Amino acid sequence: MRTKEGIVKLVAIILLCILLAISVFIILDGWIGGHFDSIDSFRAYISSFGIWGPVVLTLIQALQVVIPVLPGFLGCVVGAMLFGTACGFWVNYIGISAGSIMAYWLAKKLGIKLVNKMISLRKYDSYVEKINKSKSYPIVLFLSILLPLAPDDFLCYFSGLINMSTKKFVIIILTAKPWCILLYSIFFAHFI
Image: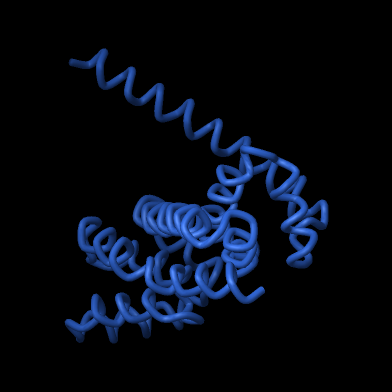
């Protein structure tokens, strides 16, 4: 039994190292290289990967949730423009959902020190106090994920710090996230 667990851990570590290497490449080559500055430069960058473009965009969309300095909105626009409504939707939905779950997991594992880099400890304490007194946070999270322009990246990290179960969080992400992305995909594929 231990050998099976050891193999699973080894595979997980290898996959994590590959993902980390790809992430570093995307940040250095794409973001620091100036390819994320406009829709046109970002579209050209994703197009340069040929058939791997959808995979690269999916990874970028996951990263932009985990590292909030990356441009998530550009990914939705470019995904719809390059890959059409359906494929653009799936690329963005899978990437953003995976990134949201990763942010939640990172907060769950690394705790307040990580989240404190994004928000002051005083604000965090006031949020936690309000949430602990209220039973409505899952509804607030659902609506925030559902609607555009909410601070959903931060809420993914924050959700990992409170007593929200992983199952509940994943269900909220998977059911609330697709609608806004679908509307973006339809709009950007047909009107830009």
